Image (cartoon, rainbow, N blue to C red; front, side):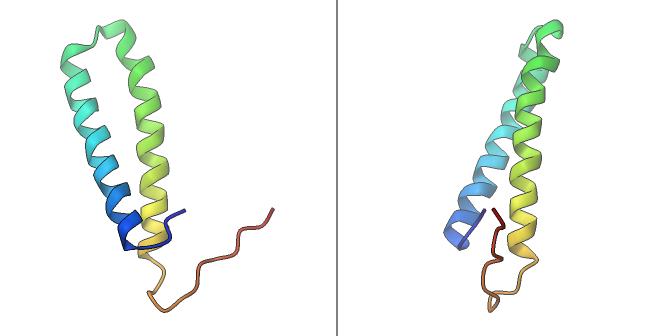
Length: 69
C-alpha cells in the first residue's frame, strides 16, 4: 500500500523499470524461457499499478483505508 507521494514516485519508477526490463527481455530471452520470466514481471507490474491507482483515486484529504485482517 502506498502511503505518501514519495512512495508513489518510487512505485512509478519501479513500474517503469520493470517495463523496460520486459522490453529488453522480449528481444534477448530465449523464446521458451520468455513467458516464464515475463509472467513474474507482469504480475508485479499489475500489482504495483493497482496500488498506484488506489492511491491516486483517494483524495489527499482522505485518511488511508483501514485494512481488514
